[in-house]
Length: 492
Length: 116
Image (cartoon, rainbow over all chains, first blue to last red; front, top):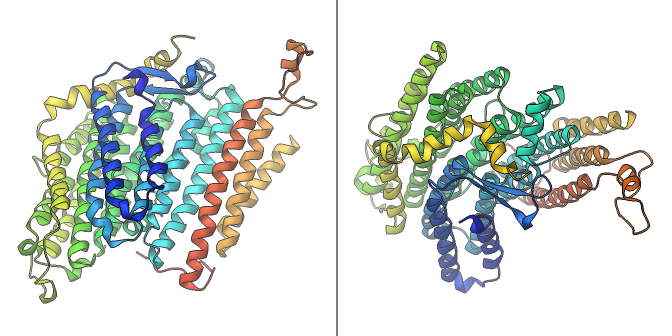
């Protein structure tokens, strides 16, 4: 496995440029190629579960000279999430993307985005992280504007401007770290910082990173692009963006930089927690009044990322575990919700909740999946969202942050209210006359919805079977900065 | 020190252009200036006054060379970052042109269909 590790980037990157060579008549072949390559990535990610951590030196250049790829349990967790959501969104898009022209370019951009995200997760070098981040986000700019209509182009441009500012700030942060310590390897940087202590330059770099990665992860007050960009993309891409991109490029990068490279201080704990609480509250308050289905979901993404950030920022073992568990769960239920909104749009051609109603009679599979996802996100047992929210709240109470725990419960309640509204207006109620003849979505799309629904239930109920190997090991990795340094630099 | 301040000035100018101007193309120029300011900063990190290019010829003394030569790594980084910047710039210009086709204007205050 160790020697195959770079394939996580090489396969999708190669496939992305390979499929562009095919003519339009061979779209079926291209679909086969991308499906197979994504399945290979998923199988590789599954094999990595429970694998001992290792580091791979690209071109046999040893650290701190060369680029290092690091495999530990936190990157394995993210690889799993990216590739599960990736393959399912891809299967869904085979049928869904027939609404658009040039499917082959769509698959090329999709694979490019997967390559970028896999790269962000496996790399152990600061500048390499920046490069992969740019690959993933540039592909996502193009995918947001894929429809080339008024709203889509506007959202894409807005996203691009803000994304570029955040990338510039991240690069500036990397430049400041390099000028201070003369190295770019994360473990080597971490070593230098722990020896020399955190000085003003490091704090400034950390501030730039929190701003830059926070913008990619749509933390309030850096969230302005997300409610425009995520609804404008095609549904499978909305699922990828909300389900994985904001986690891999935002949350994961903040975790890696704050916990492993720079090291946590009480100040950083407080900043991350306040960002989390702000996102949680502002996101849900803005979501309640929305009538566009996808826009409502996008605001909930901001709010749910707030939960993850509160857990991560809290820094106690239980808090981090809750944050990571909620990250995993959010990937599944939010992707499912976006795919459901896409399925409804595919059948009846609208996203406005006021125009829908009574879809339960015409589209039982989509409605069932939508209900399960709504129950998960609002935290109703036994679905997965309940358990992770419970863990976060217990962790907050244990750490004696009673006020934040109370806010968390209130936000969860508002989420429930908002999703009762969704259910009431879309699934139940009276079926409007013009939708009497609407049909259920095609089998493949329905199957993807069912698989995601099962995942929502399984990750909640079967936690004892995978919790210790996937989540608790990832938590231990996050908590142990010294082990991360040793993993890469043991040969130095 | 002065040159770092000038670099900061360039950075602030880019940010100002990005925030204050309403024309799409001017915003893109702002992004480009911002990117160049950071690239300049990276180059300055590796720069030494009176330094020689980081190429070791056979007749050079290694120790003297390592003291005199500038740091080559930031130059490689800047090269990568310029290429990425070019990609983003092309993307932005093409989207701006598409926006112009749809809205018949470059003014951001008139491109405002997304609200709420």
